[in-house]
Image (cartoon, rainbow, N blue to C red):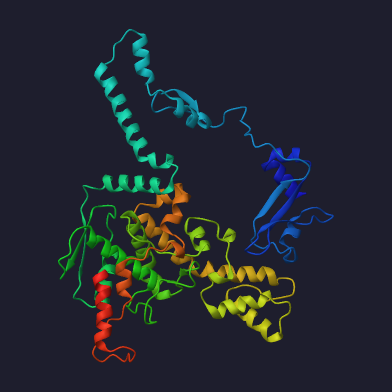
Length: 448
């Protein structure tokens, strides 16, 4: 009765529905839907909703009218609420609840000037016209800035947005990226990371210099951006996490997730990665491909509970094998202990006959999203630093352009050359002699 009275107080229109029922999300991560919460003979009560047997826990409860749908039209309040306050533009006294609506229709003419005109007074013509011109210029500027929102084609909308952003910061202090090709690969990687760890206006002009190489022009910028994305895609040679080669993203193609490394998180490297991703996108460079759709969903403020997580998204094969045990018909005592050890280490209950499907979904969600939430937040900050966040949140159809599938990966000559192991005198390769190997690799260099 307490629940019903509170609902009718907060949602009066629900009285027209002829009763109501509660629902919650159920099903696997592949096919989620709303399942009805059976109403006991005593009705929905707080005790029933809190009962562990109802399997609600922290889940969101949805309310549905029982006998008929309710209209979506908004009910306007019959009487204005709040104190009466003066409008700062026209000085008219307006109720607090109607002030926003009044501001939309306010003509901007102060009441004192209107009264003077009615009394025969004449206001200064120039002072009356200048603000109007300024307002028109501001409106034109806003329309130009938001033009990309009206363009139907995502790639064209992204192009216009990036052009406007770069034009707006064209007079800013240039970003100077420098790398010595004679340095070791690890030293070049340190230069890149140091550059992207700095706080800068990332939309300012980018000037790239290759020390020890005669190359100039846009090709140098392409080389830098390709190198940056290649490091994100395939890993850094630097040992940043105590595991040898450093991978910021791990897992299967099209199921990549941020690496669960505490050292990388504490070094704020995923914010650096976000800046690299957005900076390459801003300058029409290559992209990191194959990120998990569940990670992309949460990255752009999607509800983690609504993310579609699949088994392939779990990069840890040992954890994946434990979670897959819950898909079997029966579990042996040893398997139950293994699953329970994992679930309890993540503050989840031990496995039982009634919670296997629920526990499967919770374990998978935590393995993919729960363990990477801090990394995702850092990535989001990095995207915001480069100021492409408004485009990506206002135009969701642009997101696949910056995070494409693996099949859409753009392989560049620079990426190919970085994967070639060039021959040396003491090579152990017995299939070809040194002369033949040099001839083949020389051809590859010629193609580049």
